[in-house]
Length: 315
Image (cartoon, rainbow, N blue to C red; front, side, top):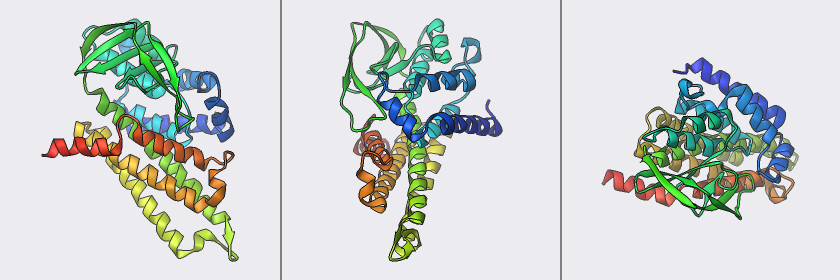
């Protein structure tokens, strides 16, 4: 069991690597690279921090950590919009661990970062789909291992997260779905909270620098109120996501996604407004946060899908 101090150390170590190796310029290089992520940074994250091994038991080559550990890392990566295969790989590991007969060799490869994983919830858009070595699909409460997979990259709003359309050459049922969609929702929500937090920080910093009518615009009462509202939205979402990580259920997962999606899209929209015209130029990072916010809100089911799911749970 990971202690609070150990998890904070994990978070700090990832943050330090991101600061050193994933500057905004490096993120742009990564997203435009052939594989869509910085392979050298991924190797460092796996070898020095063990990010791909967190949810895998120690006897299978992993770190024996918890969902909260993976969520903490994804939150830090989300802050910088750092493209990595961590989300898909973690979900693939959880899928293989839930199999009737876990493929230990493949799990060890995934935990070492030597193989990339993807989980298919909808074959029309799959995170890590175009680079995955290991593909597991969730369908009708079962898990199926896909082989001889055909992948077709698809256009996305968010250039920092590539998606692909997949089709299997062959499938083999390996077990029962342990609720991977809920786990995916919680991990994605943690990433969204990280990105929303950083987006708000960038906006607050900008309002302290931008001067109008002889004053920094951040000193205007109306903007102070708007930023206070955004801070409350982000912290509220963080609390809801934290509850879901501690006690994952279909309802807590849906609430986490709803809160994180609403907070991030609200912050990103206000960030565009407060930055003014500069925010929509390609050179500025805020437009990337805006695209990530809206792309993530539609990933794994939209906010309206989450609301319908919550409604079915409570009625």
